Image (tube, rainbow, N blue to C red; front, side, top):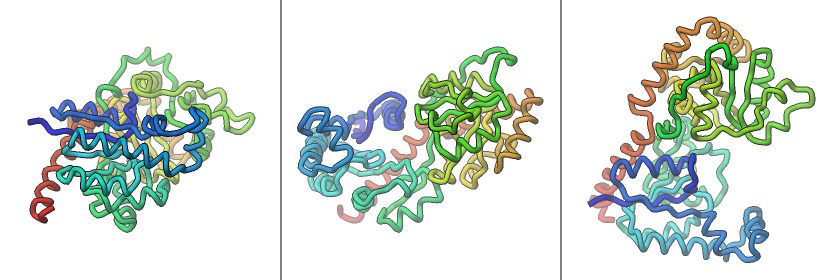
Length: 348
């Protein structure tokens, strides 16, 4: 009999939740979604204005009613696994009631952000989970100190349905370098130091914040690149940049896996976590400063064959050697079996 996973999160395409849902379906699991935002839409008063207000001010009766819908979903689905992505909008007390309502259900939190983005309510929810999965090995200790009983490292991965190679334009029509992602000050500063190359930026409206007169204004496409558009953007550039920042350091972030899955040549900011997985000069290329980035960009623009060799090796490494969301879901399924046995041993 197939197992059931109830995923708490955003079901929209190109989300982390959707990638895991597709992977679990491939494994033969039944997938059920519960979306906190949709539940809040149903329970807030005052229409759209009430919902917008609830995004800034916590109205506990509304959130409590929304959480009752999660309890109802659990009662109906009786899932083997409750997989909570990020925990946004989940009340710790509701998780406690789920333990009473469905004692056999294993509860996991897959928290994709750094400890910096935590609030008190999210921290209070940690002890309720059988396992908390963090996307960076550097954050495990912090999550344990904040109350997670079983903080486990599970890096991001590639969604091979979304992130795949797309035939590139002739080499002479490609931009030199590209960056896909939202604006942050560190990213602006790094990219300005590289603006003497033919640069293209894909990202949201926050890129309007760049300084007046910045060359990045012309480099910004004005478009967001998600899913298949991400792959298309990779196909329009010779070198794809992966810039870390203080909030997400040391990663590995999503782009660490998504760029290779598109067979892009990735030039990533060097971090210990990235080099635990990839081999510099073989499956990835790295930099630690704008000066080093400029030197490597200039070198690889002149060495197309080597650039393609590394891009092909990184693609094979990610897609065929254990770094897709199907691989991650298999690991989660294995952990579920381990934790089920642990619960039986402990009489839970």
